[in-house]
Length: 255
Image 1 (cartoon, rainbow, N blue to C red):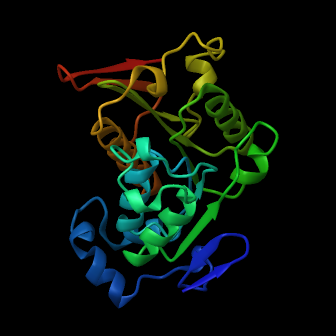
Image 2: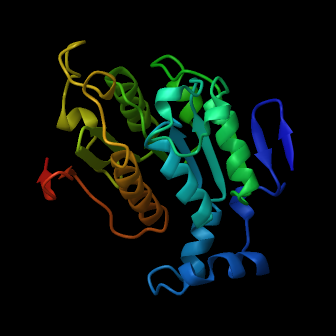
């Protein structure tokens, strides 16, 4: 296992684009490859994929673990936060004795110990409108697990320019949202909401709270759509899913 100064941890030096399935891959992912829609071809697509997860918080924790477990070949994450005690009830990658440590570094260590992807790249940096193009360029998919509107719009706008699809999710209380933006000519966040809400006008988890299990539920839905997208299976297209887990109401809106 090697970690270079840029924040890349790898146990497979070959380029992801040339990845081939190994005997170990067939042992690890055999049950997954038994699914008719996946097979060895779908598994190879995952092995050759480059995915950027933005945020190692409530949504990012399940997304990173399940994409790693499914065999995504090059998994990256951007986050600049440190672990805090109030994170622990829902951010299940972290332990109480790790408070104060960088989320991306701890996430990288955990994924590597669990036999993570061949390549895990972490960036301890705050994504902004100015650096988004540099940070997101070169990936096949971006997964937006952020919790604020300026970053969400910076991600969506940059990915539209770079022609990278985005899997989007948000959570609050008992409710979650899910969408796929910019995939195969699909619409983007600005087509759904042309402008972000004014500062302070939209509720957030820090002020209104979130049930511990909700990030896991929505994060897994985001991971599911991401894996399907990477394997060229059907995904949401110009649709927003609204999921209320208090009364199990599921609505899909077209836009």
